[in-house]
Length: 266
Image 1 (tube, rainbow, N blue to C red):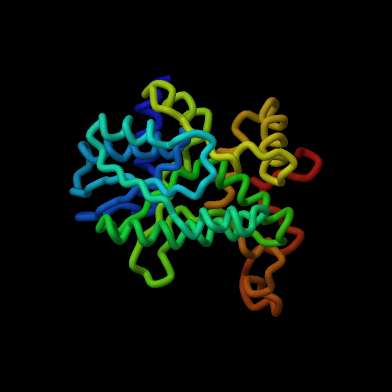
Image 2: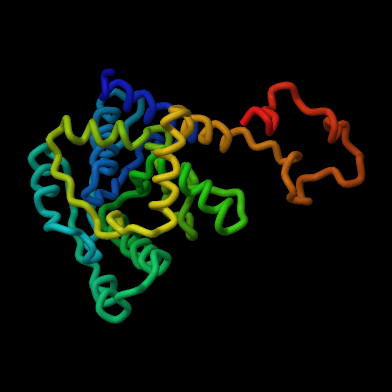
């Protein structure tokens, strides 16, 4: 497999389908020190040279005190490749570690979001790109369905509350086995975050479950991603989307579409 070609094809598909990057955009890539964000940055830099539109790319890292090693080797790697990289220590996040050492992911996420917007504004960026992969989308989908009672996942594209930033996730179709191999091929330093090493979490349980099921069903993530893009609202339980009065000509309850898999076949 040609890793670069495969990843660029998948990233290009995501950018095109969701209109992630447009003429004149300045894209700031959040580099966390992991394999996914490094892969995303490299993919965007390569596509920048081939795309029919003009856009610029820069990178930034927010220090929240959770890297397991100094992050600066990542910065040196990026600058050696001619990448504009900004490093910011977020003082409120560092104080949070001292004041609330057992704070949850939601609190950390709010602190990070504020810091990301501040940095992107200083960089003159109007687009912020995150390195969430197909694995993250699938895990988010199942986590919400199984533990919060909602059918939702990460958005491939969305906007900040004031609509001053477009937030994109171009690795939506790229699985982590690809980012792991690609980052290794680049010789990029990988600095893990302490949060990724935690055990006994819902995320870890879902990852273990995926790994086990994929032994027999290797295209599980691709199927889930496809499902997220083909929502049949009339076959769910949200009454906002159901024809309770029978006023439409929608397929009846007992008329199962031929393509649906019965429970006995799962």
